Every structure is written in C-alpha cells, then in structure tokens.
Image: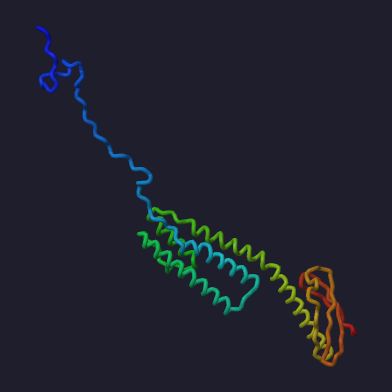
Length: 240
C-alpha cells in the first residue's frame, strides 16, 4: 500500500515523516542590551565658577600682594585693608562654590573652612568631601598653588628694579643725614647736605661728591667712597 502524504497541521505527522521540514524551533530568550557608556550613570561635575575664580583670580591677587609687600613694604593699615578685602573675596567665592555643589546634589565642604589658613584649608576639606563621593577634585587646589607662585615670581621680576632703586635712594638720604649731623657737631651750625641722585652706591670702589651748605650760606663739599654696596666712607669736607 503506498505511503500517505503528510498533512500540515496533522498532529499525527512527525518530523521524520516530513523529512525534517517542520522540525520544532527552540524558543530563544533575548537578553537585555548592555549599557552603553552614554547610559551609565555619571556623577555631577565638581567644577564651579566659584572654585575656579579662587584658583585663578584670587590666587593671582594673593601672589601679587605677597611679593609686593616683601619688596615694597606697605603701611600696617594698608596691609590690613588688602588682607580683609582678599579674605572677603575668597570667602564669598567659597560660599558660592558650596551652594552650587549642594544644588547639584553633592555633599559640599563647609565654607567656614575658608577662615582657617585661607583658602588652603577649604581646598583640602572640599577635596576630602568630594573624594568620599567618588569624585576627584584636585585640580583647583593645584592650580591655586601654581598661580600664586607664578604671580609672585612675575611681581618680583617687575618690582625688583623699583625696590633696588628705593634702597639706593634710602642709602643716599642716610648718608646726607649722617654727614649733616657730623658737620653740625664740628661747627655748631645747621647744615643741609645733598648727594646726587643716581650715584653709583652699589659699585665698590667708585666715588661721588656731595655738597653741603649751612644757615649762613657757607658751602662745602666732600667725597664719598663706596666700600661695599650702600656702605660709604667720607673724606673731610673742603670749602667751596
């Protein structure tokens, strides 16, 4: 008896009878697509205008003030005023930085740290607080230190000639006072002594003449010799 053809949908038919045409297909479970870099959660940025202004503008001002105060001493009142102005500037920027970080959902360091060795203590506390949240925030503090050194170096280069000129002038004024006092001791008269501005007070072995006149109009001159930078010996005065 001839074989009967397989009927589609006939449950009696088997894959062997149809030559594997209707082999069952095993179901496949589609796995979840891996997270791409764009989908991975990221921490909020720790960079704010406040902290970078401290690290740049405020640091530059601190470096300039430090170098200028050492080369060109300022009055105590002016030194105190400049310090308070810089402290107020840095403190306001630290408060701004702290508020921005909190608005981004981060735990920020207290701005009160700015009062302890400002603003180094704030940078350290800020770095520690952010590191606990998995955020590296070393750059602002590093930039602050580098900016201070760069500003101080540039200020020193710019102000050193002015500072040396002031020292030279001060040494001449001191020589005039000492010569006037010595002439007054010898003659019991008041003397006005003048030495030339721009005299070579730092060139060892050089000399220059100074003039003196007393209350009666009598005039003398004397020669000053440079023994060492801004240190002099004086020849006896001679009448003009």
